[in-house]
Length: 512
Image (tube, rainbow, N blue to C red; front, side):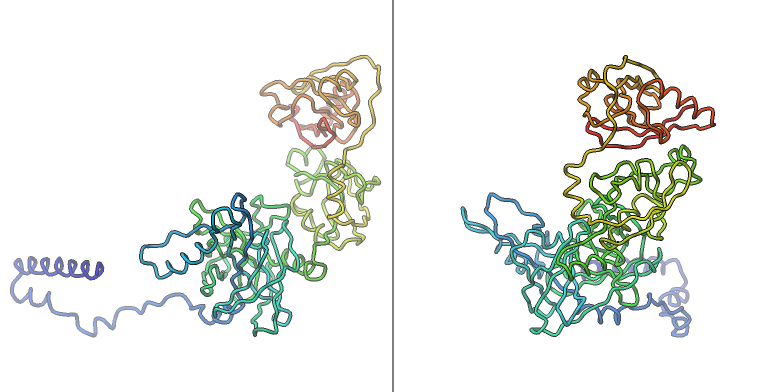
C-alpha cells in the first residue's frame, strides 16, 4: 500500500507539471509535448544487459552445501561458545515463527540443564563415504552434530577429526541413507586478485544462499593462528556461513569461509577463507589419522627487517631469523644456531618468516630435508630430519634457552653504549633482576628514554648474549665489538637479547 500511495503521488506531480507547462505553450505545442513517443524512437534506445548469469553454476553446487547444527547440554549457570543470538527480524517476517520455535526450544526450565544450539555451514567432499568439511568453531564443544539438507532431511554426524590451528573439522554421515552430491577442491594458488568467486552457505537449513564477488587479496594474516594465509573476498559472507565453500568459476572449492570483519555482524564486503592449498593436507590427515601430524623443525623465529638484513650483510630482507632452539628438538644438535637466517626449506623459498611454519607443518614427519641458512654472511645447507609438531609442543612447555654461565667473582664492569647502561652478569645483578643461572652475557641495568635502544623496546633486566652473532661476556667486550662494527661501515648493530628466563630475541640498534 505504501508503494501504491507513493506512485499515486508521483503521478499527481507529473500531471500538475504538465498542465502548468501547457499554459505557457501554444495549443499545438502543448498537444505535441503530451503526445506519446513514436515506437521508432523507443527502438533506437540501446539494449541494457546485466552481467552473465551464474545460475547454471550455482544450481549444480547447491546440493553439496549443507547446514550444520549442533547441540550442547550445559547447566544454566554455564556459558557456551558459538551460541547464535536471536536475529532481529522485520515485523511480520515470514521467518518469525521459525526462529521463535528454534530459539525458544533451547531455553530450559529454571534449575534444569539447557540445550545450547548453534548453526553453521559445511560441504560434502566424498559422496560415497559421506565426508563433510566445516569449521572447527562450528562444532566446538558439541554433544550432538546433525547435517541438514535443503530438502528438509537430516542425518546425524560423527566427528572424524578437528584442527583448531586451522579451524577445520571433518564429519562423517551415513551415505547409504541418502543420495549425496559432492564437490571437488581446486587450486587456490591459481587464483589471482580480481578473479570471480562464488560463496555458498546454508546458515539456517532453509536452503543454500549464493553470493558472488572477487578475490580482494591473498595471503592475508588476521591473527587467528600460526598458519594465517587467508583469501580475502568481497563476496557477502554472513553469520552462519562459517564452514561453507568458496568456489572458483569452474565450480571447484578454492576456500573455506571462516571469518569476516564487521562492526555489526553483517557483511561489509571483507570476508576471509582458508585456501584449499592449506586445507587439503589437513583434511587428508584428519581423514586418515583422526588428528594432524605436522612436521617440526624445533626453532623459534622472528622477522628479518631491513636493519637486521643490513647488519648480517644480506642483500635483501627475506627469510626467517632463528631466535632460539627448542631443547630436545630436531636441530638441538648444532645444525642450526640462533642468529642463522633460514632462506630456503626443502626447495621452497622463505620470503617471509610466516612462510616457514606453514611449509614445515605441511611436510611429513620423519622426512629428511635440506635447509639453506645464512650464517655470518655465508650460505650453508644442512640436512634435517623433521620431528612431529604435536610432540614438540609438549617439550616447549618446559624448554629453556641454554648458555654458558658467567665467571663468578670477577670485578664489576660498567659501560654506557647506545643509550644502555651495562654491567657484568654476576650473583648481585642476577639477584637484582631475577635472571636465571642459565642465562649468560651482559646485563642491561638502565635504558635512557628516547635512546636508540628505547626505540627498539629494550628494557632493563634483559641480557645481551651476542653482538653481530658473536658472544659477549663483559661490558668492555661490547664496547670493543661495537667499535669494530663501526670501522666496518655498519650502521646498525644486531643484538641477541635474552629475557630473565632465557627466551631469546633479536633487535637492531642504530649506531650513527
